[in-house]
Image (cartoon, rainbow, N blue to C red; front, side, top):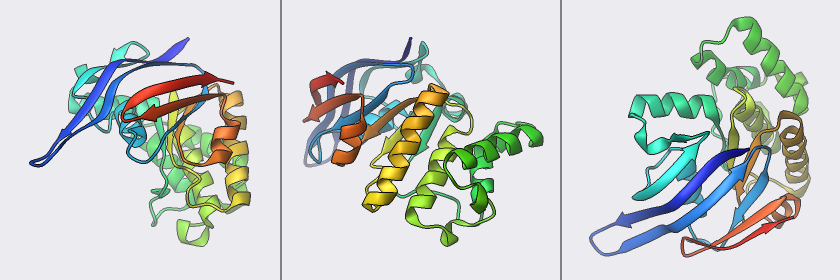
Length: 227
């Protein structure tokens, strides 16, 4: 079942000096429970493509359909709500709220969705257990290692059972052991929760574990390899 359909997608940035065609005619589909990565040199359009998929930026032309919903047709408030309910994000810089505990960071999106307290608490502890941090639920980010913070970020991304998770260079700031643990956790959750994961990365460890590798150059798809 197709979760995402991308049709002839373009993103052009204009400045006074130069026009940059960051995404140039990309057409792709992603199915349920894929574990895919987007690779390519710096400036190839990886992060721009992820930002477009996540509704964080709007295309110059083309379409992105998520479960049949065209993101470009949504008004700003509807887009925020749609993104919150359907898309999880894992960022290179973790982006945890420093004043909240690990448990509160994971619960945050669910509280915005008006889930009941009991449902939030159950889902939060289920996810913290899944990422191996049930015993650190009361710890704030400053008391967690980089790898632990990124695992909290993964739990947060999955909290609302999104259609897919976008992970932009999620292992870039981690040592080898922490990166391996994180990737194994995400692969396990991908299988158990049937949630699509889409990475952008330079990390060969991520590429090795991916079931599909899409290569971009100059904003264009130059290869799309199934494993």
